Length: 306
Image (cartoon, rainbow, N blue to C red; front, side, top):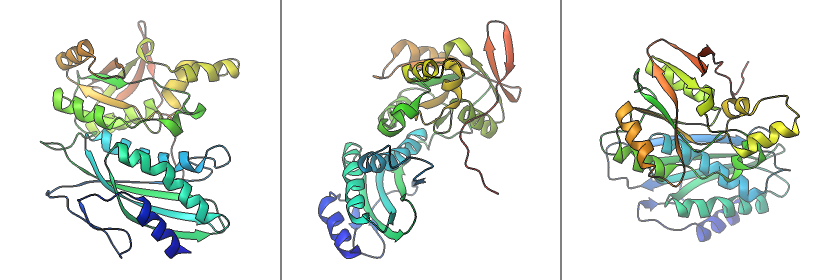
């Protein structure tokens, strides 16, 4: 069964010149032709990162690669290759694996990332899929979380909140946007929003040794967030959804004021860029509305361990 699946993958997965030894051997050999490599990995589990009864295998496979591409985007790295690990339910695992790849491969082609290999296993539990992606750093080094400076503007792509209505499965990683912006403008720090706007912004402040003030009226709120709030009849405000929902997979960037002004004036992307506040010297996270400033809890999604 496993050999049959390997042969299926070998026939379906496009060949790239960078993959010297690929599917079918004990390990892949990838010609990166560089001294540094950007590596990221994500593990997705049924019931945690997706619900298999509410998402197709194709959507799940696509998401598994997309979240890794979003991590590369956060560092302005160019995708190069990936490997995929599957832990399949014993019943129906063969067909499930094929459909997962049918969702993953179109996105891989879109971003010219080679699927160089992986591994499969089976058990009596739910689906688990893990992707490890490799990328090339941009000239001058990667964009990291640790470079934000007091005075930098907080620039974001897109809008936030309500991803549970579909975006968490269908989002397009901001890879090309990040690479273009990093080449065209001075940017001090960046992160992708996977666990929530407030929480991921807080992570930048923690790594950079500074604080941040978010202007409540400037946060771009998605239509999906407003729709959820309306359905729940006001249990939360749309802004709460935008700040805390997560899985938006947009970018948060720390940009010097003059560059931020130029970036916003240019609006060089198909997705809108918005200034939502500034980084400050005092450590902490605040929400400012009018003249009132209150502490902004760094809430969002976090995996819990005991």
